[in-house]
Structure formats: structure tokens, C-alpha cells
Amino acid sequence: MKNLYPLLMAFVSVFTFAQTPCNNGIAGSYLCNGYDLQSSFSLNELSASEGNDSWGWTDPLDGKEYALVGLSNGTAFIDISNPTSPVYLGKLPTHTSSSSWRDIKVYENYAFVVSEANGHGMQVFDLTRLRSVANPPETFTEDAHYNGFGRAHNLVINEDSGYAYGVGTNSFNGGPHFVNIQNPLNPVAAGGFSAGLYTHDAQILTYNGPDTDYTGREIFIGSNEDNIVIADITDKANPVTISSVSYTNVYYTHQGWFTEDQRYFIVGDEVDELNVGGNTRTIIFDFNDLDAPVFHFEHFGETAAIDHNGYVVGDKYYMANYRAGMRVLDISDIANQNISEIGYFDTYTGGNSAGFDGAWNVYPYFESGNIVISDINGGFFLVKAQSLGVSEEEQLEFSIYPNPAENNITIKSENEPITIVEIYNVLGQRVLNLDFSEKLSENINISSLHSGLYLVKINANTTKRLIVK
Image (cartoon, rainbow, N blue to C red; front, side, top):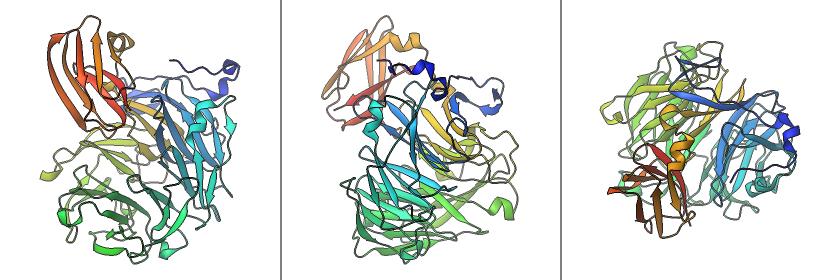
């Protein structure tokens, strides 16, 4: 069903209309390789002076996708369900004052927002309110607020446990400040971890990696300025340091992310390109044994730009590379110390030198394949890999019903026989792979799938959304 916003056509300022293919290495005024520009909003259109972090939310009721974009003066919410004509729905203003730093994460249909603005605390916003915005762009109010800390540099959420972790706060030596958000509208302080000192960023997850000593434990991996700290924080009253590890030419250990098998940890140092020179350096550790992590190798990129936030989806690492924009690396052979750049979209047009401009964050987890890039100077960009593009005619060739579904679905084709069906979860992991004997209709048992959103790839050339109840 198309999105209907009555009377909005008179208010063109809340819409952006653009789709710019990457042709011969350029999309409009932006350098690119393998990624098309779907649409964008400038900082002026978002009524802000700077951009910063970003995240995403997919509505479990209808699969609509929304971008959550951090700004100097608040958090913008953008409906990207029509990626070439997104709608700027409105902004949640900062709790106190403006700041260059704002961070957003999502849990159970709620957005949680922190900032380095003094006294900001943690805002809680009910994302289901975005379903019924009558007059975009609206000015929203927060639904709850946590004041157990004031400023925070960043926020981490483990969706499995229902805990949020403010890092770089004015508590616990700047280490993670634990907050129980299992009831999102009533966040409750739950202690903290101070032994690792200041944490700039972190990944916190329920561990299922190769070190079976910690299977099922809640593990903290902190990027702590001059080293990586690993801790078991399962018992909130008694967090325990497991180990720490560093590397040569440490200047500012900024952020890191696990490969999906939780074997390798990919780290960026935010200041080494400035202080040492050379091209973008990415440091990889082998975390096969959490008690004894070891340096694996270094990868150097194609430009001199500074690396910022990076995330893993399948065999790809998506990096916000400041002045070099978004860079996409193939990490499928990381075990053999091989990483290569396979694509990019450069949101900053002033060159690729080392400096604090350009892409701050990327969010690559939408089931549709759309990727959000939030840019300090440029605002909001939505891009997509060219290989994922599917024409409207191809999309209409196949239908899936029922959708949402619970135990079984039927895929029907108008003309092209169905030969292969692959189903992927939102992390890009293939969860079903089925071969068929060239019929126009196939019934598929999906009872093994958990509730959530999936991407169904048909005959290797058409993708459809599936919601499992």
C-alpha cells in the first residue's frame, strides 16, 4: 500500500525527490563505486547546523523502514519506505542544549537518545507514534527520560538482555552505566563497570562465539581510548574484567565491531591518520580466546581519510570514513588476513584528506538493502548497492502470500518458473535455501523462522519482504 499523507503535496519542503544512479564513478556531485544515491536531506532541510549519528527502525506491523538521524539540536525521524521520496516526519528536540554529539539506539519499538550536552540524560521516544504523523514535520516530545547520568558520549543496547549502557558518562569513571530498559518507559539504574576506565564506544552482546567458556554470557568489548577491554557483565552487581589488548601506534581507540561468527574484532583508531599519516588503518584482532586476544593484522584503505564508525553485515564491513564517505570492505577472507575495498559512496566533496568532516555513521541493517549515511556537513543520505536494485516489473513478477505469515507461505510467479528461493534475516544471514523444479507456484514451510522481518530472494534476481508472525 502506498503511503498517504493528506494535504502534504503543498508542503514540498518535507519531501525530497531524488534517485541518482552511480554512473562512471559519480552520482550527481558525489564520487561513488557500486552504490546509487536513493535520496538525501540537507542540514538546512532538517533545520540543524551539524549532523552526527544515525540508526534505523523497521515497523514490525508493516515492514516500513525509518531512519533516525542525530543532529546538533535533536533527532530527526524520516520515513524511507519509499526510498526515492522519503518523508521527514519531524524532530525530537534535544533535552537540554545543542551538541555536536548525539547517539541513538533502538529497543522494542523505542528510540533511546543520549548526547554530550550537559544534563541531557537519556531520552525515550515511542517509535510507533511515527505511524500516524498528520502534519510533518512535527516537533515531538519524549515519552520518558532517564536522568541517572547527565552527558554521555554514546549508547549501547543489548536487545537480547534488555539493557542499555551509557558510555563516556560522568559516572563509573566513564565506563558503561547500566540501565534496565525492559520496561522502556521506566528505565532503572542497574550499576556500572568502572575498572576499564573511560569507554568511548562499545559492543555488548550475548556471546555465542568460539570461546565456549563464555557462551550465553553478556560480554562487553569496550573501545577505551588506548586499548580494548573485554568484560563479563552478566552479573550487573559484579562485572568482571576478562582481558585487555592494545596495538602499535595507539592514538585514540575509537570503535570496534565483531565479525558475525564473533571470532574477529575490527577496530578503528580515530587519530592515527592525523598523527602518523598514511592511509586509513583498520586493526583486526583474533578473539578466539577472550582471555587472551591477539593482534591479527592491519588493513590500509584507499585514501588518507580518518575512520569513524563501522559495522558488519555478513561478509561486508561498512565504514563511515569521514571525508571519504562510506567505504565497503569485503571481509570474507579475514581469517587469511585479506580485506579489500569493494565499493563506496563519498558524501563529502572536499577531498579525502585526514580531517573531521563528512560521514559520521552508516546504518546498513535494513532488510531492503537501503543504507543510511549521516554526514556532519551534508545531513542525511540514503544509498543502495547497484546489484540489489530490482525493477518494478521484476517485483510484480512474483507474489508472496499470506504476508505476514506464520507457518507457511506460497510464492507465485506470473511467467518465470521458480527455481531457487533464499531467505535472509535482517543481519544478512541466509536461513533457508531451497531448490525447486520450475513450477509457477511453490508452498514453503517457514515454521522454523522466528518472528520478524526477512528478505526473500527468488531466482537470484528478485527480492521481496516477508514478515513472520
